[in-house]
Length: 191
Picture (cartoon, rainbow, N blue to C red):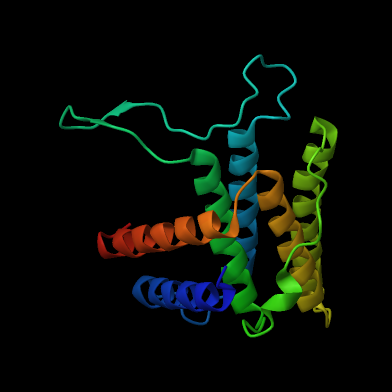
């Protein structure tokens, strides 16, 4: 996965949004952190494994057939991967905002993850990412010197989540590129 390129692409999108929305000089980190938390919750919702009260606990990896406005049927992509990549957009934005060097991407690679995690362990992987988001927020709000260290931890935990969900680096990168193009299109259309 070419993280350097993805950091640069996200930076270009963020700069476009800031310019077009007149947000220059504003502290957008709190918004980005909350947006990441919301997207991570949406990713967990598509994963569904924590829903012990439901008989339907299978991850949402295919959109149901939907009827488009003109009456034609269309089949969508992978909702779980889409939500994961939405998280990635905000993680990259946060990294750019705190000055994380995209040249130092080796520190962002995830560690090893057992392949036979039970549901409690899988819930723990999601919880670890949520916890890391809070650590980044606290490091930023307290003006600590080390938000880059907590950011690297967040990224590694997020990579482990992707591994747990069964995504390959190639799938993630491809989905990121697709969503980045969609996000630019949305800006063009006045989203």
